[in-house]
Length: 221
Image 1: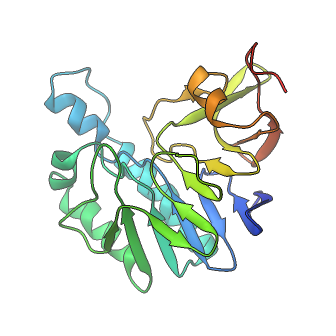
Image 2: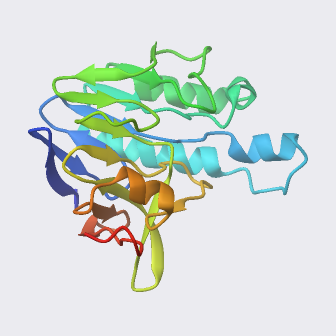
């Protein structure tokens, strides 16, 4: 899988190169911030026209991760759609594709700040999800063993920026899984305040690559 294996709250997890998180013991695949329908939402609100391919690209990547891991459950950790109207405007073909991905497994939509989860698609809707010592929610708090999304972190290596997981001894912040999603630099004040000094960034790409999280001046270890 070319993933990076690490431990959080005593649980062994794998950060996949795609930006998904795999919990082998529970056979749980987690993805965050798909933002499906972003190009449709921007066009609807009179913004810059973007090629409407992000739903295809995101669902294709998710299909590949599901095929590789064969999860018993898939958790979408909030902001699965760019807004509720984007969920309602999902094409019949894309809705059918999601239905096929849901077949034979539990599917969990966690509430995000952009949407509470699509009402017209299958699956279970939750505000947050707890399993063992881990708590999955969209926006980070101060709880130990927490896995969240929302911030779309990115980290840089050799001058190239990539979506990245941020991980310390207490929490994990996941990268945005969806295409066309922007990102927040790991050295931003917001992420520096959330993560402990020894945090690492796990970069996505051909393989998941762990590097020390860059610290801003004033936030050094």
